[in-house]
Image (tube, rainbow, N blue to C red):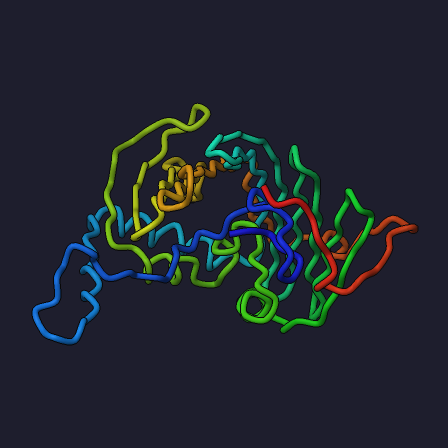
Length: 269
């Protein structure tokens, strides 16, 4: 999953949507009993009720919020040929205000990107190249995220946290879920959950002391070459009644060059 400007990748490490791969391949060990090959049925999810309850509380808290913001410290892997895994670091500031405002400021070892969404316009600024692109989009966060993913193959950082129902996409892909226990994230006691799909393992650490917000997210792409991993530690959660609209308005250098979305390119970690 990557923060892309249209079809061109700007870096998988720019952020990860908490969405599992929708493909559910047939079990290769299951031999067909009829002449015509038939796909194996998708496995029935096996999810611990306590893990499911805690996930639901987190999704409800985020989905019901009119506005929120957080900071994320990120580590991500890039697999180089021949199968050498290298780790990079990033940080991100994320702010959302329903129904139609979103701002992401992402800085990493491989460059920086900024995104602003307000009303019906999405703008992405590529800092290393001093270029930006804007496009008209639907005027609600849910429909905007769906539209840009469908038409531009653009997945925004940690985008599932922004949906009015953050659990919707995760639950469609989960085939296993477990409650691990109470574990620490930077001195905070958190409920530690583990989920998996056919190709991704997802771990969540949820705050026990206040709102059940995610404090840490780990995603392992175990079927990708080298099984790269993405780790995000989330802090400075705020749930204000309102965020100033100026935060969601593009702040571009006067010399920034406007280009079309399909022409924007960046490095692909």
